[in-house]
Image (cartoon, rainbow, N blue to C red; front, side, top):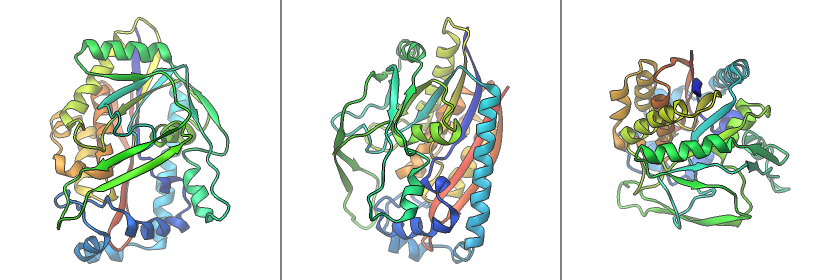
Length: 356
């Protein structure tokens, strides 16, 4: 029978592929971000409102020297995951991540979906001629500079779908990519002071593998690709987001599915995304990491929902992975809370592995 032999968890921010001298640019860009959720109550506030509420002591710690140190910490952790994956050498990798206005829109937004086509493309993206140099660097960890067809373990994907259905998960599936994608998504997060909801329209365009998955290929596999099975959760967009309890149960069901597969393959599970961002919530991050390190399922199942608005919702990808990896030994490789602006925007970048 097949078995899960390795787990990895990684943040996938563009900052992780962007030299530290450019990190302040992303802080400047946050002035236009309409998804800044206040860690205190999960409500969306403007950059200016977050600036007014910022802890001065944390603001004092935002320096280029700190950025340089944090960049080195994150790169060392990514290198350890790359090395670990190569040493364990699993036959297939189930990647648990989400989609953000890339291939899923409100014409059809499943809670859970498995892709099981023969391959899934990564499409290189060339920045416009007048784009600043940091823009190309920030995208390199997702798209790279060449197109690539990433092999998918379709047999495992099919088995995963049928097994999850038997375990009473209403699982969507897809087998091929369209020539172009586009549509509308509304971010229905609680708002403060009567702000309007953020509606985003994406024009139809060629789109390959969503960035949460391609980051794993480009940065963790370093292009020595192992066949994958992409498992998507709709972490970001109400009204049909999974609860932490449901995500954890999904992970447990994934492990049962793998172990019921009549195959001798060795499988890895990788969580991609999170932890807190676009504002840093160290309380959420440390709660989730402690729950995973101590294999405390109840803590993970009961993460408060208000902490999981906006992009912090990607923490659910880790919760699902933890459910699948209860039998392995967890290790935190690094946790780096990066405050990149005086409004304390940024993210809690985290890296873990689960080994036999």
